[in-house]
Length: 332
Image (cartoon, helix red, strand yellow):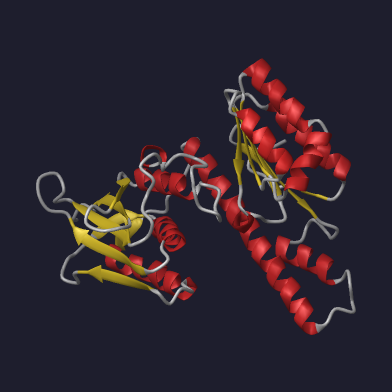
């Protein structure tokens, strides 16, 4: 099995064979993300959980499982507290897709069950299969199914990209396309995109910067925008009303005069004090729609730019503050 590849498989026996191969090859960590409790139970019946526990016992491989809970899984999760290196965490309804993912030792395989040509992209393949199952569907039914298909395909694509990025960061192989960037100009599009996605009329999203400041950095425009988008998405998840504000400002004082800061402040629920110290590690989240990779990736991107990122609760009011510090470009 090659690293950094996506396998789309129709044959259930081939899926089981691949799953066994991945688990038996693990030396450090196995992470399973299951789309449903039934998907997890099928793997248990096929002996995959036994293989994973054997890897834990024989090779000290850490095992982490994200899955929607039912009664049986709840009982298993309670028992897992007694097993060091074995963790089952609940994935809420909002974060489910129609795919299951296995991540092993910074290699991964996404297994998508399709009945169409695997050479086509996910949207086309899943869409053609589901929409051709019942040719008597009314137009509004077909549109509803298409909406479900597109949302799941988008989640699959995002999850694929997140795992690729986290793998590159861990292997220190993240490549940046460096150019001189006006930070004020760079932040405008991610903020506008967030406004377009914002469906809660009780939230105001603002952008604030001093046009007279000359905040130029040398960086990867797409990657920096990706980080800001991650932070805005987090704020929107945890803010039910109030404000989300993005600030860009030049550093002042000793040690900060050659830096620019990007700050996202919200009036949401804030950060659990128990999570602050591990907020930027993999699979740490209390969100019902994420896998906990976004902040880990954001930290890796910012550090690759020679910057730092941190989070804190707002001492003056409710909500969280995320701050990015980047070095200013050296003048020519």
